[in-house]
Image (cartoon, rainbow, N blue to C red; front, side, top):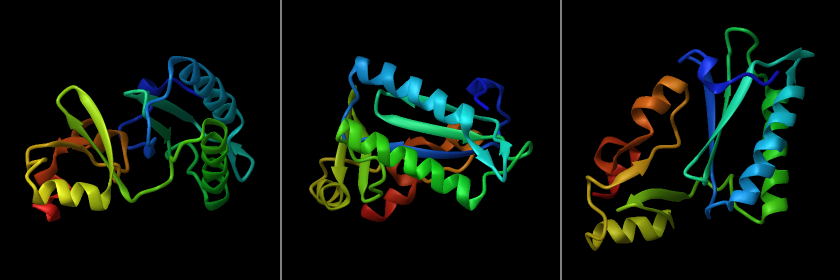
Length: 160
């Protein structure tokens, strides 16, 4: 069952899918509609999940589930990954490739392969203070505090 994102508790589980490109405004409208429809029908063992989403920077799809009401299960998580794969095909984007880094370059959001980011760090084109998106966060609380952080404070620190 779709619920407003801001009504979910901070302990709610999240999954972050980063796009290799920015979505257009028209695509955002369509994706929001598809997300609400999917989340309204999303279940685990026949029970509706209290779930929501956010789209940040027209590039990140964040899905959240209130695990206290009904936890997501293997089958329900598989269903969400299948849904994300459908979005990848329809919009010709990568959302599941974890071997990429997204970071702030001034006001611009940059997306590079892990190897390119490592090379940029070596060449000092990015610094330990570069703001990166740590998509390994697991809860809404972590999203609020640990998602957009200096590279030195995330797993990216190994490149410096």
